[in-house]
Length: 265
Image (cartoon, rainbow, N blue to C red; front, side, top):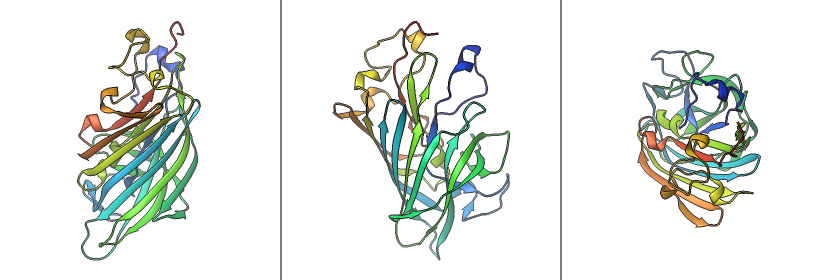
């Protein structure tokens, strides 16, 4: 998944930072250290993300997202209890752009609590509290019980304001990297994108027709168009299987990006 650095050129200081969304990360309730909290020992939770389906409706000004995660506990004796956090990453220029969030567990709506936290960019482990060592985020948190003998389905629906830059482009990102602290690999991830108010050729793909000089465009949609299945005008899908988002760099981010407007600096 895409992460911001603290090194911005002068030209980019005027850019509105794109909202960065992420899949449910298991949170270690504490500072650095080996203390077990909520069944979270070592680098990974005892709970595996078996699958995720992400439906994204990319509009002109905002993006609607519906996430469906299927989890299974590997704990053989008794329930596993884990806090889940859906991070809304931000910098000083981006104080959080999720403005609607609904959470469900096995179809039942549950309230989420917004807590400040951060992610260690080397281990993908998430923590509550403040630290200058990682990516700061507001986490929409819920606590979930995972029985040893069945799957648990967690759903999140939210609306996020799109990012825009002075170059006239619009963009939205979704990251899987925060899922790196779940046990093992993510079994299957499906991404379904619907363009609302856009056409497919409005998206800037490196391997597509180049509408703008690359030195002006600078940022492209990812993955490449060749990895997507175009199902209908304005609809495309992508499937990844058995991947480890903490280290598989080509499986860390979905980035929707439109062409910039030539001449706008």
